Image (cartoon, rainbow, N blue to C red; front, side, top):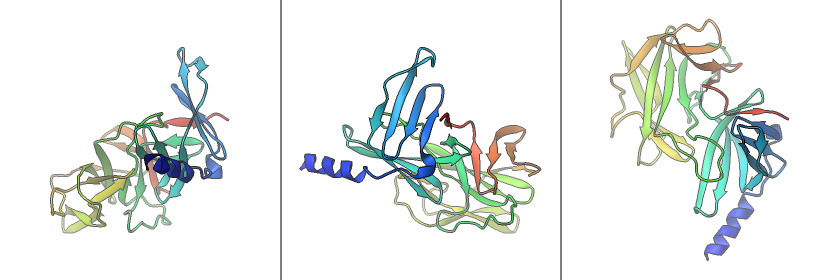
Length: 239
């Protein structure tokens, strides 16, 4: 029975990648190549001067409203792993936020930076085995001149399309209480509550697309302000 299940998994993961993903990407430690129907990874050795023979992963890529998901079947570990990522100008980011609720996306046509940006990535990389998963994620809520920093943590509860709120004067700013990121559920409120307490906020000015809080640069907004790309890209296209 186990052999049959493995065979079914292999058939399921044989679909092609999206055309705009095709190509070779790399960082200081590895080269990752997406062809029409395979994912190849080779590790760099000797301080990046040499690459090992590429190894094929049993994987596919799917597009969703948060970017892309690399879905990898690790047969030996009997595990299917989902690694969310965003492709921007030939660069792959694993740490990023997307604008709006997962079940009620926001309109970004105004070009203004406002509202909820939810964290959408939680894995450490594209690996030959299961990768490290983040215990906590950070989201943001922007008003005209403030940014609220929202802490999410892993929760052993079912995912629900439920809102939580940030008290701000006479307003209640809505955010997602639960997130489903890479198949793992995170929450920003304990138990049955819906109000986020003791949340930090900072002055914010959107003079350009750079994103910084309290003088510290965290990343930048994409062209239509529908996403924040955080930190450095994980991979950059080389071919």
